Image 1: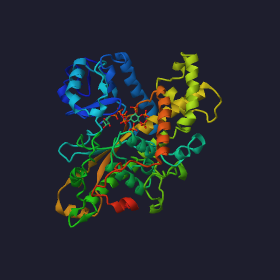
Image 2: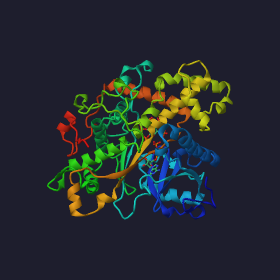
Image 3: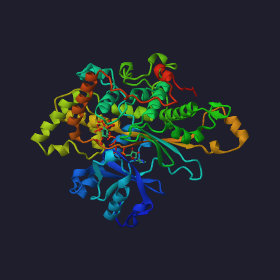
Image 4: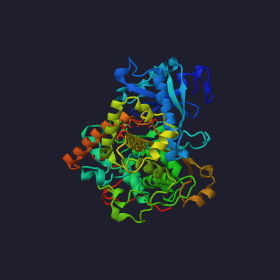
Length: 504
Ligand SMILES: O=P(O)(O)O[C@@H]1[C@@H](OP(=O)(O)O)[C@H](OP(=O)(O)O)[C@H](O)[C@H](OP(=O)(O)O)[C@H]1OP(=O)(O)O
Ligand SMILES: Nc1ncnc2c1ncn2[C@@H]1O[C@H](COP(=O)(O)OP(=O)(O)OP(=O)(O)O)[C@@H](O)[C@H]1O
């Protein structure tokens, strides 16, 4: 921990100046500001706006909450997902005046739909992390890195053993949830992205999935260039994000690809090369065996009937995800949810009842942490048979909560153009014209916060609402809720599910 009077990453805490920081982004429970020069961000907690006068927790509790996030990330999630992808950060204690000024400074940049919550200006606690959208490794004089943030969501179908509605074994949670979100006005248009395609390990399906993320990013897809967000969905807006503007940004990075027509790359080709590079990064593992593995989902649990991808069109078989890839690790962790919320809920109730009878057991069962090796061991060594004990039930709840975190995390892929690619020699360039662009890439996982024990009943209610909405509407949506077809994706392409796919 760093406190007033100390320094962290070259910043003297007592001399913190809000003008050195700018608004970077936010989610449902935290707000992120980035340093204007250093590659660091501060992640601050948010509270419901009605609590703004009266913070819901003390400074010590806020500190503990952030320390829990660090411990959960470094002792639990890092072990399951792979250390190389994780940056757990450190808790810092900031001067209250700095935090207050910062909150005023950034307020007008916050999206209106997120303003039902306010930034915590009372505790002075924050999480300091590397800025993953502006990696320190790149040289400022060179072309800025492109960073792509993907919130992939759940990549498998639950087992039929535990679910009461057959539809849950056919259509994935994300695709059903899209109908519910559009029906409730959270988004104007439905995303045609399907996580099961992204997690398939099959390049065609992955390409198809990313294309739909580009088309309708919602909160699942953002692109940053040199630390600035250049492409995302504008929440509450009727407009689609500006694809032409994105292409304008991307074109210089893909000038030397293999799709040039008379020295000019078509927009399609730029986008296709971009997606191909991104898919490669998602499949890369940074060492390890890299071999395709048959995943534990099995054929029937890895295809979603709502996906528009046409199975018949798979040209290169189903490769499976390399075991050292970020997607494989996330999927394995998501699959710690073996019972589905419906099978888990009775076990949650068993723990809840036990805690009502013996409140002091909360600490022994590590319901709110500490998130240490013992916690990890509990969930990893959980027996496969229910012996009726509260320990078994608590271990399954721990597993479920870890899986929830993995279903809600985001991946950041940083693409740094290779120095060689930037050299401007015409002869060299001609030689390179027919091979794909080179980038060095690094892959990280963010937002690995523990999900509270108390969030489980809400999960069950939401699951029921999503399924009944889907069954009620029969998967039908109000007119106009499908994404428009931007010029770059022709109607024929969508219908036939033809892909802009170029084997490496
Ligand atoms: O329940 P879900 O699947 O809708 O996920 C929630 C996310 O909604 P999404 O569907 O991704 O738009 C939601 O994201 P948004 O606020 O919609 O951007 C949060 O990530 C939420 O997590 P938490 O409660 O803030 O810890 C997420 O809640 P958890 O279920 O992970 O607790
Ligand atoms: N280390 C980081 N470097 C760069 N950008 C970051 C970093 N951490 C978070 N961000 C940005 O800030 C946004 C919000 O952060 P985060 O997803 O952690 O918030 P959250 O409130 O936990 O989200 P959720 O809605 O999923 O609960 C992210 O989508 C990402 O764009």
